[in-house]
Image (cartoon, helix red, strand yellow):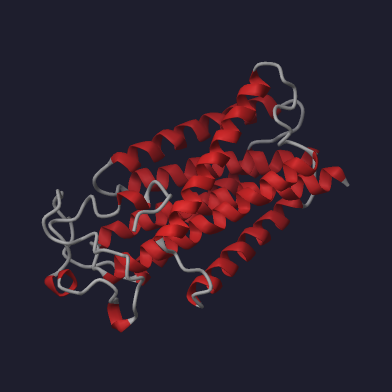
Length: 284
């Protein structure tokens, strides 16, 4: 199963010829503890693929994923709070703070690309990305809360938790089933969404004022809701990828890739929730 998340799509690149033989022999559709997975999911850690040396002989567990995800999200939250407190967004300092935030976002983007193309996870790169992403989110959130919609940041954080909890519940109850058709639909929708974003930026950059209208009004709110739904779909696909990695005995160090991918998705959801709530508050 491939996922739209660029980090999870590289899971398995670091394996050393597959998991332990107990997992390598496990039939498609079987998971650890006998819990079935979707019958279309092939073992991505089967022997015979191009591989890099595994740095640990221990298979990944759900606890590994939880601990590393908490660490990565903790780095985002910590630097977001520090940047909110230490990078003022008053009129005298707004340009400087925004410059720092944009620079941090660009470096974070570069780090995410480097990690995406590495054959093995690098905790330093992943935590560096998380810290820099937190700087950007902290300044952006502080600016919106100060000048546009006071109190919206708390609502956006709670909204992100609500979306994540809802998706997790729906996934665990199998109300959401990540199949090939589901994955293909989400990939197509995400491609269209990103192309519209690029077109909007180009129209704005070349003098079309408000671009395609995704920054305000009902169209902006609708676009943000679509973004939230896409983020929820990405999250379900990430849960599926983690479940399969644990079931098929992925190497333990790849829990860092799970943390990285989940962090990317949660940041996406937060930004889209923040967009919708900001537009709702500003329109009111």
